[in-house]
Length: 214
Image (cartoon, rainbow, N blue to C red; front, side):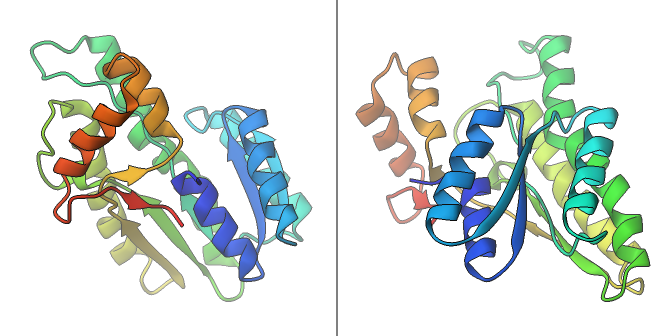
């Protein structure tokens, strides 16, 4: 089983890309690295908090130093949800989810866009949103939904701005995906009832089953 970000890195590596994987927790990035290298892919990893300017600057600099001063593809895959409506949600929770789900995308684009614009061939940026950014999916997660909607519009607007500069931006809007995160969510919100939690997720899907990353 792969998470969405790890699956994207795996597919890119399988198609010849030299991938630079970042995670808040280095051990998670290293786990992805081992799996990619086991399939003969090339992968470098580091730990960074992409909600912090200094960390993103260090991440971009490290990637440029490792791979010859170019960044050919950027995939922004970060997300965090805390269920609540606006009346129940604390300001701290709102600010936290705004930072994780939207500021991270802004910061990475902020530093990578000028690099892609200035290099031969430009480059693509893929931002990962969520179906929750387009419609209500059965639970009150207003901050997450609002920020994932913001990612969609941020991507559309920035794509137009950079359309003639050689940089292409697209947004991926996945539905419910069965990833390692599901087990953690079941522990937190369903008392550890993974089977029952997964069944509820299946019921929310049009074809009756969660998607798979790979």
